[in-house]
Figure 1 (cartoon, rainbow over the protein chains, first blue to last red):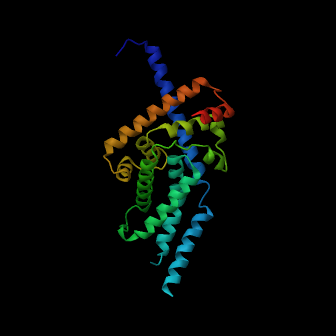
Figure 2 (cartoon, rainbow over the protein chains, first blue to last red):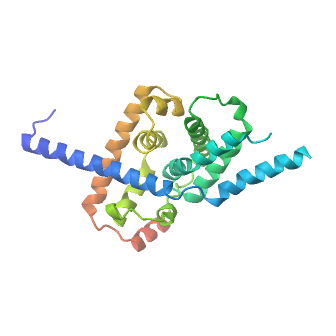
Figure 3 (cartoon, helix red, strand yellow):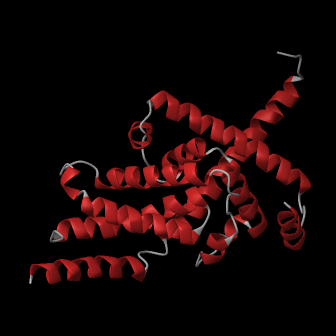
Length: 59
Length: 181
């Protein structure tokens, strides 16, 4: 390891923590933004079509 | 095959988190929704191989993850499509983090190798434990831990570079740069 000023090591560590918490925040913002959209109709329709098809095959 | 109502409900209930996973993984809403649809079809066709009492959500995530990875291998030579369509699709845009920063994060996430990206999303956003994430990805717990660490380190690097440019190239410039590739 090269010689480093203690101050700059601390700065780097706190900068690292700040960036890590920002990364966590951004990742959850992206993820939760999609969660908030709920279940799009397309997927409800898909299951309904599968069930209708099953019923049709049974008749 | 008649859909058991409890299976039907469990699959529907998993859709929002499957979409969040697929969109974060692929960076593209349309492709993600196709992945989710394919996951649902595969799951229902193979529902007999699901062990009742085990984690349905983890089982569905495993199917989606494997579909994404096999598709990724096929597409590897194509340019990753992170066109901002999912950022635009978000109903409530994450105001608290700011548009530019959010875009930068999205681009940086898309630059991660897929094994690191999936590990970070599963542990950092989907709420799975390291053990569950390891099971979903079919690897050792230690491998997941090191992938998450590498993902965080790489993202920090990418975002520090982007951050240093601050107001960086605007969207028009980016579009021109993208076109020239």
